[in-house]
Image (cartoon, rainbow, N blue to C red; front, top):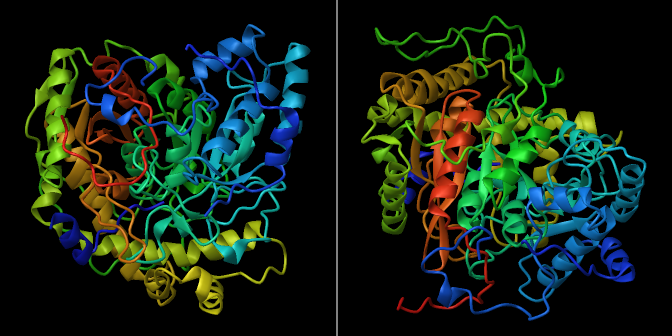
Length: 602
């Protein structure tokens, strides 16, 4: 769930078609795929100007076609042009052709052995005139830290949890099933959502191996929702589900050229999802288009009384009377919250929203968009694409406020608290998850048990990088420690009152924008990721939403732009992101080019 960590060391490193399926795979081939795990170690609406030379290479002339969009799938099912079984078989054929052979992008860690049975049941319901929701029959792939109480594993990519299946569905899995979606399988990820080591390679897990970028196969897909981003980009399904603590939806979405929506903490239930941070974790959709992502968010966004963030009630740890030892200093213009909190709910509670109603191509007209210049400079290519995006927004009628400053950036010392908070919450959160979702008597019951397992199985789990963050987290005290509470207060103040809220309110803005990513760097299992930079941290510590959209390409690699807003501003961000997407029309399908030195552009 975290793509990067804001320690001083890491900050220093960052600075330096209408084509519907006419013929599905045979049932025998699909059933054969379903019985095993996938564990191999041009825009539909427009195209970008630099895609030609990189679109020439394709794995095979008879490659099964990519999944149509959610809207196209809905129309095909409604018109009787296809069946749910055919959609599932077609997705399996695409996965078989690209994931385990051909380009071998290795995005899928496991196929649901019940997928075809579920598809048949949903087809029978359609034949009887029953439709559970507008997403009835749509296949979806979900990240392997999202619990499912079925035949599939839930491991966060770790061999330590193989065989210890969740006995109950997560709230997200339950919502997908109730909407009539087919959970086709699980996607690979950065193991333990990229919280194990400073030297990890994003997209690598002990269970799943290394996921690669579908645009250039020796490039990093980014993490931790690597598999979900790659699966969406590769066209396995129209929508996938990722999780984010800090950057783990938006970063792989940006690097893999898809849309990623990171919702406000509390909009989507985290119950039954292997956690890092109760204060920052959230779950969201990834898709090639804003429209498909918004359609999935309609399914995911549901209040859950079992998730404290849905109620806006910060948990009481220990005695509840601990006093923070070092609260932030208030300014005359800002009121400090007296205790840590989840994002403030709107008056009357979280509203039920149809996010697809926000898909307005004129949504940028009259909008005030603030430019976060302080978040640029980590990649010349990202900066160039960002300038093009700003110009496109002006052309679409947006009022650009440039630059906009974040007050907390004047004193970035709060960044020293971001990793300790995650470590505190990881240790406690894993113990709670293991107790609540693993089988009774499971040998893994704590972070200490995971550390011991990794040491005992070092030839597989520690073959490339260590577990230094795990060891540091295990040394942390409980969540009733005043030092923990003070650290949470400091970072929430930096992200909210002295961060995004201050910038949005003082400039009367509808949203803030920043580059999402630079061009993907090469995979390096020896030294770990070569992190250029990102712009997700303020929203992460605030618990606020982000939407990233493809903005352009450099050297055949995608670069995204991120829209940021205040608490529960998803509807507004989707409106802006959709209008931008329609304005620029840059999305280009990946061409699965083998790794090499990129030649000079013509």
